[in-house]
Image (cartoon, rainbow, N blue to C red; front, side, top):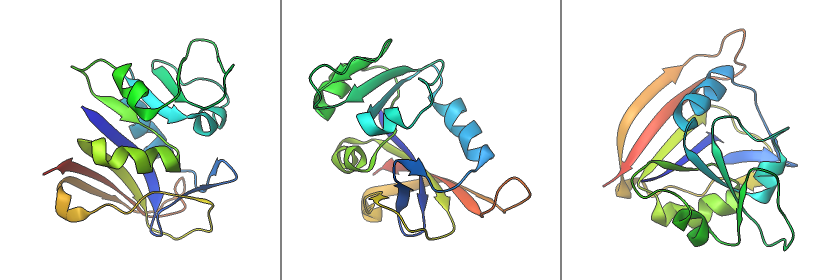
Length: 160
């Protein structure tokens, strides 16, 4: 199973200058819980936005750079090659960035979105989801509070 997981603003913004636009501790906890002990597929810039590889996950990095070889990671040249590197009987996660999300939408079985209820200036965006191709399975709203500057909703879609 291929699952796309992302935090997305109302205007589909993902980030700017290879940085997230918000800090939502509950979203980070959810991401960690969902992706731990799984393969995570990402572009090189997404990987480089982390201070270090994420623990308890197998990183697959898509890049065109010839000699790119971060320790402990699988490096491939295409999304197709990344997917082939994952176990077929497990849930595998696409975690970004924008171009990788765009390429993976037609291949995904599931989309886990954290919808941040605010619009942001950004340089990277999540692709539009054709909602007629997806069934909403889970919808959980969270109000802003002292740790979360914005309202947000966890949404899970399964391909129809």
